[in-house]
Image (cartoon, rainbow, N blue to C red; front, side, top):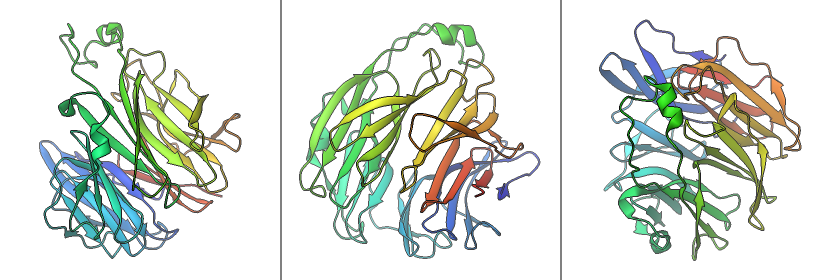
Length: 343
């Protein structure tokens, strides 16, 4: 444990964590105290030895860093940039609406994804954005469609993933946590999963749409051609999550991990190909209701997975991984904890 927000009657829900280097890192989230919601950032410049909290003006959604010198924060109302690793943020002009995530290939060229089939591109550091027309090609009404993840293992090769999830009729009266048995009876239905891929830095895109149970929430790719994808399922599904090995050079994938009692919420790949899975042990059939013990698995071949010891205080609904290089790996939870991998 490197950081723990431990305050009576309030909780820090960390939404995202990034470490652009081994010493400098940023976590963003919301302090919840009764009906009050306060957006904050927690920053370290000495590898987690000390952390400084500062207020944010808007509620954070996701982070992205090009390097120590330049990073971006997507909020519920816009897009912000920093040149001081999260110590000061500056709102960018005319921020795109409905944005969920951005990724920059260099200081000028970047992509953004979000609600209503939004995929946008900038060539001037985010001052102006244009729509990627290929994003509209997959079938499905835009109001029920999102793109939620961007991965570029090289400057030329990239994948954008998303989904179309139209509302489903349900006879469920109470929320899942109030009536677990009824929640488990609600049948999972497949929906469209979207993919956009490019091999020329976004000049052209190939599109795809396949029927899928669950939602692709994470995609981590290496320049070598290997990758990991995370699919998270509804309460009524046999497994809470499933991890796929992705060979993005040829488009093939295979299941490498799933467990009825381990809800994986993030995956990570180091440059040498070591894979990590982070999540929580399920304490019941309904996900994300009762915090569970945080669990981390490690594999060097994506076949044999070994459980790693985790600080006994770490309990959460979800865990997030972030790292720099092969040895510096960090984990944040939605209960205000930040942990570091000990070598």
